[in-house]
Image 1 (spheres, rainbow, N blue to C red):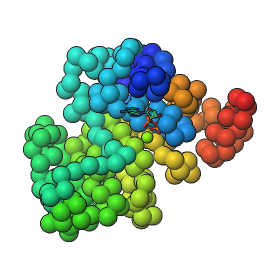
Image 2: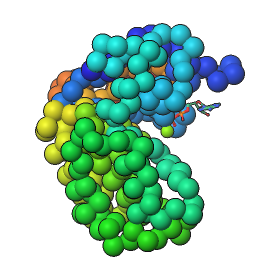
Image 3: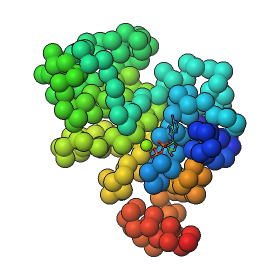
Length: 236
Ligand code: ADP
Ligand code: MG
């Protein structure tokens, strides 16, 4: 569904992505893991077309994304830090997004809006929101247009435990419908019940891309955090 072919991205002399090739298929929930600054967000932005690769290319459903911007309508994106017009209310923001995304062709999915009870906060302005409420808005928007692909950058950061659980259940449900979910998180224990594959990046390089069962078998570790630690120690 999404294939990166030898993609490279430099910021000045820094190689943020160093010859990365991976293939991400529908029905998978793939964790993007790696230390701070390893290129996870850059990789996500390259898929979204927000970062242009210096070389290599990315295909979405077999089409080079450079020549077909329409693919973006098939992606729901929750950024690591959601920035929104300060003076807009939650209700206005959601209405504006509906206007822009023109959802005439899709069935809207407002489950998260309802479960997070955002409808009760529609008059609140974005600038007045706590970090957690802002994250709830970002998450709700990512899922609202029922996209085939969900790209979630640190989605549970700042969410209270109840909200985090609601979001995790939603991710599991959407994956079960055959969607592709790409997710980053610093808290590996959060990913244990969610992910089917792991992509590990370090210094912009792809260290491995494995199925979770494979990773568990290779390391003898059940938990993702232990399994990753075992792989990294072996590599030294
Ligand atoms: P991660 O999400 O894994 O923490 P990032 O993809 O955000 O890492 O960043 C990878 C590296 O690229 C970091 O060293 C970061 O400082 C650098 N970087 C990211 N975006 C930019 C940018 N727009 N300009 C310059 N350097 C950047
Ligand atoms: Mg990041």
